[in-house]
Length: 405
Ligand code: HEM
Image (cartoon, rainbow, N blue to C red; front, side, top):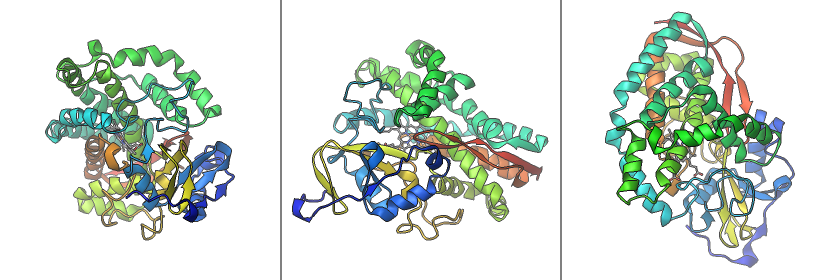
C-alpha cells in the first residue's frame, strides 16, 4: 500500500555510521543486521549516502511497491543510469513494469513448471551418483566437492549453456562484487574475471546454446518477435548470473546447519520429504543474496520516515529473514519451523520475485534428498569458512564427514 505523503508527519531517518561492506560486516553481518532493525523502519547509511531497511515489513513493502521503488537504476548500490563502468544491466531484473511484465510473461512461459519438472529425474540421477561418491570418501568439502560440483553439473546443462568451473566462478564473483561499492573486493573480482569476459559473452550467444534447451526456447521467442532483439542472450546471462552462485550458497548453508544439528539430520532421515523445508529454512537462516537496491521515483515516506527522490534504498534480505517482529526465535535453525516458504524473503517478493526458484528448489531437493538417503550421519569435520562478497553471503569451505546408511 502506498503511503500518502504528509511531509509534516514524516521524520528524518536515523543515521548509521557503519560500512555494511567492511570486512568485519561481511565476515559476520548479524550484528549489523540487528543494528539496522533496531535503528528503525528505515536508516540512512552515512558512509555510502544510501537508505536501508532491515525489518521484514518494510523490506516487503519496498520490494512490492514498484511504483514508488524502481529497479531501473539497477539493483546494486550504484545508479546505473549515471555515467560509469557498470556491468551489463539485466533486462529482466533492472526494468520496471510494464516493460518488465511483458518480458517476464514470455520467460515464465519458457520456464513452465512442466518443463522444469522434466528435469527432476536427471537431477535425481546426478545427485545419487555424487552422493554415493561422497559417502564412499567419508570426508569431503561441502562446497567444492558437493554443492558446487552438483550445481555446475546440473544447472548450466539444463539451461543449455556450457560453463567450465573456473570461468563461471570468476564471473559470478565479479557480478556480486560489482553490485557493491568500488572497494578492494570489487577491484580484485574485476581483475580476476577479465580473462573470462569474452568467453562469457560468447557462451550466452545463440550459436553456443544446446539445441532443445531453455536458452534455445528464448532465442526462438526472439525469432517470433515476442522478445526484442538481444533480449534472449541477456536473459540467459541473468539466469547464469542469478542462478549459479545463489544455489551453491543455499545448498551450502543447508549442509552447514544440518551438520551442526544432528537431531535435525535424523529428522530428515525419518521424513525425507522434509528436505524441502530444510532448504527453505536454510535460506531464511542465511540468505544468499544479502541486499538488493531500489531507487525512489519521488520523495516518499516509509515507516514514518522521509526518503528523498532518487535515493537508493537497500533491502537487507538477511536482516528481514531474522527479524524477531516476524519470526519467533529467528536465530534458531529449525526444519520444523511452520510456513517458511513464501514468507521468507531470500527469493525476493513482488513482481521481481525469483523466477528460477523452482529450479533452485529442485536442485536442492535432489542433492539433499540423495545425501539423506545415503548417509546415516552428517557432521562437521572442521570449521566452516565464508568468502567475502559485497552482495552475497556464501561459504568458501565446509569440511564434512558422513557415515553410510
Ligand atoms: C537459492 C537460489 C536462489 C536465490 C537465493 C535467488 C534469489 C533471488 C532474489 C532475492 C531475487 C529478487 C532480486 C530483487 O528483487 O532485486 C531473484 C530474482 C531472479 N532470479 Fe533468483 N535466486 C536463486 C536461484 C535462481 C535460479 C536457479 C535462477 C535461474 C533461472 C534465478 C534467476 C533469477 C532471475 C532471472 C531473477 C530476476 C527476476 C525478475 O526480475 O523478474 N535465480 N532471485
